[in-house]
Amino acid sequence: MDRQHYTTSQFAQKAAVTARTLRFYDKVGLLSPSKHTEAGHRLYSDEDLWGLQQILALKFLGLSLEEIKVCLQTNPERLPETLATQKAMMCEKRSQLDAVLQAIEKAEVLLRNSQGDWQAIIINVIQAMHMEQNKEWVNKYLTVEQQQKMAEVSQKSYSPEAAQKIAEWGKNWTEEDQKRANQQWSAVFAELRRLVAEGKDPTGAEGQALAKQQSELIGQFTRGDADVTAGLKQWWKNHDELPAQEKPLSMYSYSKEEEAFLQQALAHYKQSQS
Image 1 (tube, helix red, strand yellow):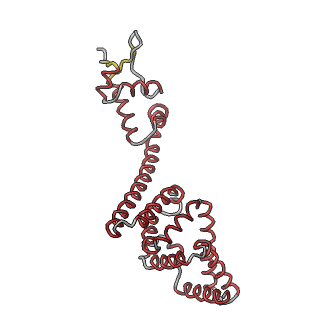
Image 2 (spheres, helix red, strand yellow; image 1 turned 30 degrees about the vertical axis):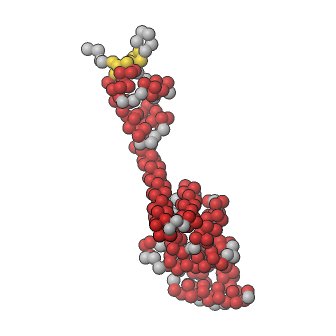
Image 3 (cartoon, rainbow, N blue to C red; image 1 turned 60 degrees about the vertical axis):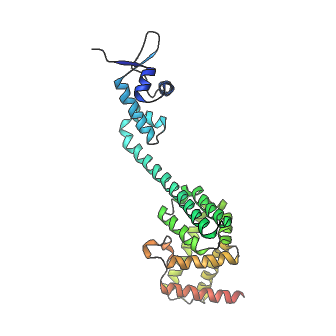
């Protein structure tokens, strides 16, 4: 008994797609009809419907037509790997949408509480936009949760004016800049731990070299701006008050002995520079 076949318009109606979509899928080699009439018209079968359903399902999951073609025609055993990759991409998009929604919610709160303080609202949105623009490489260094926590701490620490300056300064901040900063700060903390472990004098040559290095790194960030400097000091205070498991920069935490050494070294260094 011959299988039932459908014309393009009949099959399109049965599958809830357009005839144009079917013609395009045939043209790109994604779904060809089972047979053609003598006049060259396409005829589809119920088996073609199953193939189309697979295509539509994978398309819904966000795969490109080329990826679908590879999965279903040339190497179907790679489908689990492809889906895993797609899942990771969707999770990333979800985190981006969450950040946008969070920015909108904060804007709504600002509107209610500050009675239309557009400066604060725009600054908040700019910060969210900037974070999203750098999201791809930032994710190599910080989890989504850490990024959100840093944003929360920043919101509490910096004045609107300071936040606007930081957002403007950070527009051209690249992954290479971040790598260099990470290396510099890691070197500072490694040296701090060594000096404390060896019982060095914070006012000695090595302690003062460390104080000079840290002061210069802070100066690169604050650019000597008093408002930003005050905000940065408050930022670290708020950060250190967080529970240990919530600190986004826990790698830069230090013991009480290390903190005392650093404060003494910095105080002596500032006095020597005045």
